[in-house]
Length: 257
Image (cartoon, rainbow, N blue to C red):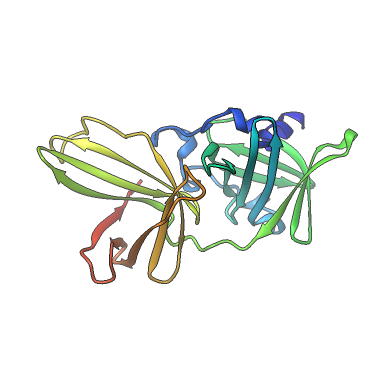
């Protein structure tokens, strides 16, 4: 249990001295979407399905920081874990974790397997709109996450578009991994029908929100970042983005596995 406690408490005890833990290239397992891991629907507890959030502050000699940790547990036995920590004075991002997972509920034990890692187990209970993790029963240590409404998953997936620039071609990707988190990367080609000569590039992470026709995308590097406004529509299995309501659209297609 203590191994899991250290993972849950990562932000509180070490985050301010770490930088972007698990922020790795798109071809590494940690950045796979929930659909990249095998679900186990038969052992899902419906009470734990949803978005669970832990928010707090850290005040010490290094400064003042705020953090947010989330678990998303979906109905098919997959999910996603995120953590973010920011320095209050500057809004600067101090640490980050992004990782897909699968999970199983066995009585009062939650078994989580992060992509590319060994399974971890923790005792838990769901009470009203909270999930309680019993990280050390002998000492009475618990961590409490609160349930919050989540946006729908309309954007989820890896979307790409090809553009030409000089003598080269770039395959630009936006990968939406949760209803609020995405990253961008690209591959570079000298021949669009051949293998890339460079890439995938290092991912750049973003936060996003959306309404019926606009998606707002802001850098995850600063909690005070001004969002970029993009108009969007879905048609024929494709995603169209433009800078204005009647502007020129860029067409994105999903990556088929």
